[in-house]
Length: 402
Image 1: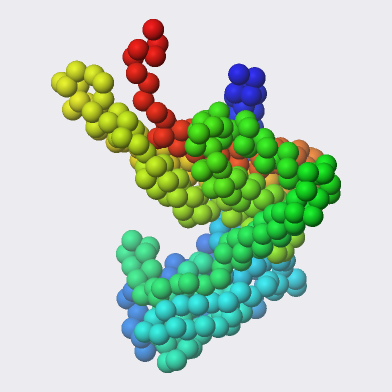
Image 2 (image 1 turned 60 degrees about the horizontal axis):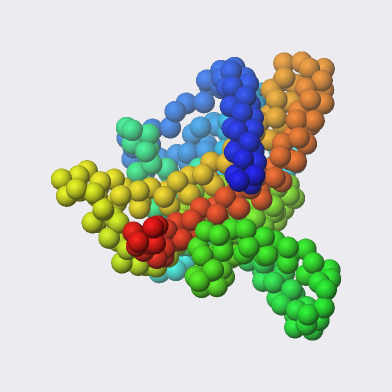
C-alpha cells in the first residue's frame, strides 16, 4: 500500500536524523562535561548525626557568594527540561529562577497541601503539621528540621518518601490538553447540531477530515466494519489525545511545552488501556489461537509461551515507541541550543557563529516534529486498531477458501 511505503520512508528518515544527531552530539557533550566543578564535595549524609547535620545545599556550596564560574552542563539542562517537575520553570533572571508554582499534595499520616514555591527551588525545608519535607532532584523527601538529605553507599537517597499526589508540570499540561480537547469537540458537536447536514465550516471543517481519515483509513480496515462503531470513540480519543498534546509540547511558552507524551508513565497508562481493551474484547478464536494453536500438539510447548509473550510485548512496544520518539525530538532541539553555550564558553564569536546554525537546525527539527506529532498519534492508533482487529476477527473456515 502507498501509505505503508510512505510510513516506512518517514520512519527511516526519522531514524537517520536521530542517529546522525546523537552521533554528532555525543563527543560534544562528553567534552563539555569534562571540566566539572571539583571543589564541590560529594554529600554523604548517611554517616552524619542529626545534631550536626548540614543542609545539603549549604554543605555542597559552603560559600554561596563566592565568585565562581559554573561550567555549562548540557546533559543536566536537557534532563531538567524533559523531566517532570513540581513547578513550571520559565527563565533564570540575575541568577534566580523564575517559575510558576504548582500545588503540592502529599499524604504522610494525613494530607499535606502547599505550593511548590515554599521549597524555594530545593533550597528550603517545608514544615507541615509537624513534619518536614524537602525537594531534592525532583522528588519530595521527608527530613528533619535541618533538611538533611541522607545518601547511602550506593548513591541512593535513604530518606522516606511520602505518597505524592501533586499537580506536577505534566499533570497540569494534561489537564490543559483535556480542556482543549473538550472545548474543540463540544464546539464541533454544537456546529453539527446547529448546521445539520450543511457543509462544514470553521473548526468543524478542520476536525471532520481527521475524524473521517481515522475512521475510513485506520479503524474500518483494521477492526472491520462490523466492530468499527464499537471501538471508534476510544480510538479517536487516543489519537486526538496524543496528537494535541504532541502539538502543545512543541510550543515553548508556559503553560505549554511540557514533555507529556515523552513521559513513560503517560505512555504506560495508554498501553495498559490498550492491553485491557484488546484482551477483554478477544473472542474465543483469539484465545484458541494463543492456547490451542493449529499446529501439532508437540509444538504447543514452544508456541504458547511465544504467543503469551507477544500479548505482553505489543502494548510494551506501543509504550516505548511513543516515549522514545517524542523525548528524542525534545532532546535534539535542546541539544542544538546547547551548542550555542558550549562553544560560547570557549569563544564568544564561536558562540555567535554556532547560534546561526543551531537556530537553523532547530527550525528544521521543529518542522519535522510537527510531522512526528501527527505520525506518532497515527501509528499508535493504527497499531491499536490492528491489535483489536486481531482480537475480534471472526474464524474463517477452510471451506471458505475453496
